[in-house]
Image (cartoon, rainbow over all chains, first blue to last red):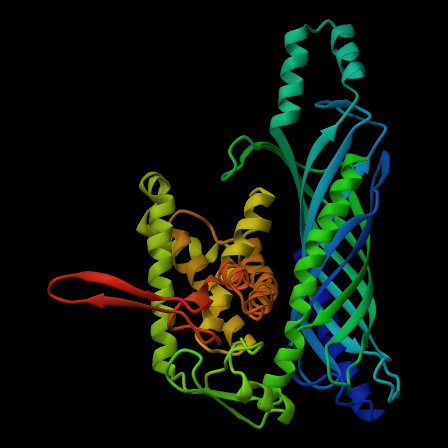
Length: 257
Length: 254
């Protein structure tokens, strides 16, 4: 993973150098991306899809908040730290493995994705204050906290009793589902395309951004959530099912400075 | 269906915060372009002199300084020593709050070894989202509003609150915990996002210029209440010390 990270960082740097050269050669540098710090925040919708070797779960459309703090080296390229925070509600037909049997589960995931990104102004010569497209590639780390919000309790009961279990066994499983949450983490990367509006006029600069991200869950944890402050790790293991989260974010936001 | 309703509710809550934060952008544009330089005489809302501001606004403020002009006032006279002294004060206060809140954990798990060894163990924590997404941003927004109340610009306030967040995370909390990426980012960035909105909401309420408006304004931004704050309509809250008594004089303008 370290090697991949190094390759990506160097790729970003190379792209940066390329972008600056290209901008200077083609006289694309303008005052649209003023040099210096910038801070943006946006609100949007997210759609997510969890794929693994033996499952494919789609989410309902959820909400997302994104923010980024960056620095424009010149009027063309900026480096930024940012995050996507999205809340999605998933529904699956069944989850079954050596530890868990959950019929018709519905669960929610809060996913926080922190990234470092390179934002490049797209090479267009336009004097229109409402046409300032940009492209962004990012790489980072994500962590998702989820919990099972509902499932088919009758089917679970029948399964446990059918396997020779008792009502107490069923109660224990139900209590565990209520007390536990799961935590998923791993690297992620993606790209975004957007447009700044109102850049040369007075008033707020705002933007629309479409972003696509792939987040890989390479480690998962089951946590006891009865202690609200310090979570107790009940179990952890590397995911063996190649679980990954595909997300699409459509956001509208403002450049605050 | 319930979840869908929750999502919609959440969407609107976040939307309201962002919408209020949006108001701040114009204000920053004014400050950034140096159109408006405020100076203020001593006293409560007694005399504003306004330099280089739009004429219409200047006349409005001169005619009726109490009406609709409550705002953040940029200070240009904050020296480095005052800035770092204030930073040290906030750092000291964060130690105090941390001890009060976590004294049992400090007794059980805290040590000086942890304090400096944990600095180099940055990680992604597994705390609940109540902590990461609610408590940390709320803490961060108070930090941001505090620095704003000292008269700094938005970017300066963000910079100083970011430093305070780093100081807390790396030089206070390491006594018992490993620094966390989420805490650093969400306290500073989401705190600022929330602070931008709360500040504008507070100013908007103060500008109703009536009792409920001022009360709401103080609730949304408690730093507008204090004497040291760099906002328009001020309330004086001065500590008083003498041989015979220790007290606090409190004057609120409604």
